[in-house]
Length: 529
Image 1: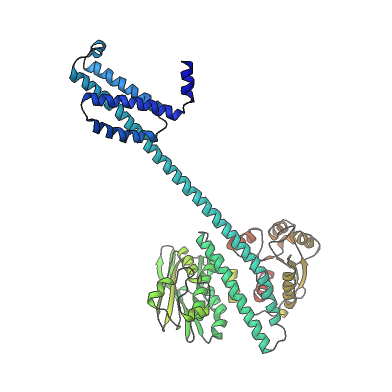
Image 2: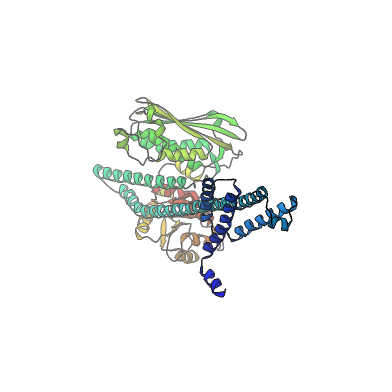
């Protein structure tokens, strides 16, 4: 007996369970056949189907026990309800009664095994659903990691490209202010144009990566619509005139000098994209940027912007492709103009974030009209309301002479890159400022304790101590040190980077490459308080 138990224990649990159930099931089959209620062929067909399900199941020890209990209960029920005593049951001679009991016992066994099989299949289905859910969660996690890695990579590449680009653009600006003949000035102009194109590509790729990752967020503030329109036209007027085009703007009188709440830089970005395209694909004539009130809504105004040109136009069959990423229509004129094909896709995403729509009406050879609508909330009227720094910079798009600044103003330049030190210092010298240079945030802290500065130009990524930490610590110092205006000069160009700079206590933010005119305006604006 002991030997038998030892041998049985060595048999795998699953095999023991299946063996037990198979014996019970075969008892049921034999009873079904002996009852005469089913032929051998039908019984074996049923047996095949049920046993196939059983062979998939491995947790049948308890289930087999329950089938046996169900059989005993069935027999007990027959004995009670049919008034058959145990002695009568043992000695039962009635053929019909015996067959009836055999059939009931057989069906009890078979129903139990079938129920077990169905239960197992439901469990397997549940396991599959769990596996699918886990698979989807894993995919989502991998997607998020991939998007984060891509964003970090693009931000890093943007920084690494902007840093040398700052040197190229800075040198071109300094060179443009020196004595040159017409041929040399032409060379410098071409180099400047190439730098602007490269910078535009970088910014478009960064914006599109944010859109793909669903991270495009609007930053609302009060802005003046009139100044926004004037600033955009002023910024692009020189390029339009260079191409022999007339660029004009038209503003609905009901919107004139009205302040709204919205993301003015993003709105301006869309306008620049559309006007730039109109300039790019027009050889003559006029470009009109018009703004009008389309509809009064509850708490908001639906405003329609239109950019109309007299350019090459677009075939109607190709219009639907325009707002797709990386799309450039297949024509020699468009290929000649170049570009990433991201500008309109980015514009569409921005407009839709502003609860608006964008579209185009165009005829080949007769020009195009790009339009979009946005919903804007009107700000409370305030005589102190001013445009955002970005818009103000565009409105004041004029050179500021060095003599307008005071030579007594002292600026601390905190920058670790030697080339950027040299270029920025040369610009400041040309503008008439006295400049001290420090290589990291810790040196900047030491400098402001011993020297009185009117303004600080602060890089962000530096060794020892970065610009953000330095700005926070300066703001914790006693007056008047903690009141010194700080302008970020950085190759990090995302909206999050800008927000981080302002959170650290900085007053303004300039992205590399640094243009001398923008640097002039930022310094004067912050010195004016």
